[in-house]
Image (cartoon, rainbow, N blue to C red; front, side, top):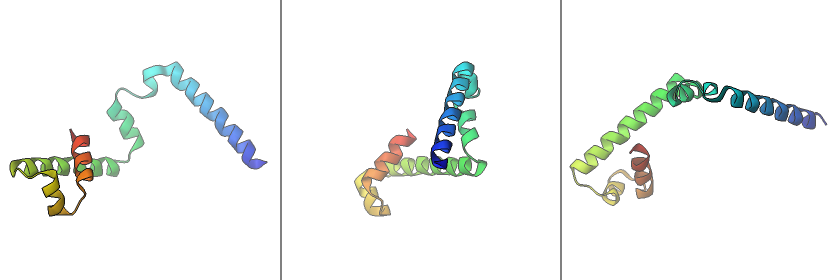
Length: 92
């Protein structure tokens, strides 16, 4: 029965939070998307993401400079072509 009470309390809290967000509109998210993301991520997570983005950018540049296809790159680094494609598309 305790689980049911906690569940109902969580639903009520979620409803109150949603009502507050609707009332405040864009102010509920902060001034922009970057501020919102930073509110969700730790500085370490942001730094790790920035390193990943920079690394993928350098790999794309190097692959293109050497005119290596994603399939050839797959053989060189041992990562599946689908992952390479996904990372490159996400970077774009």
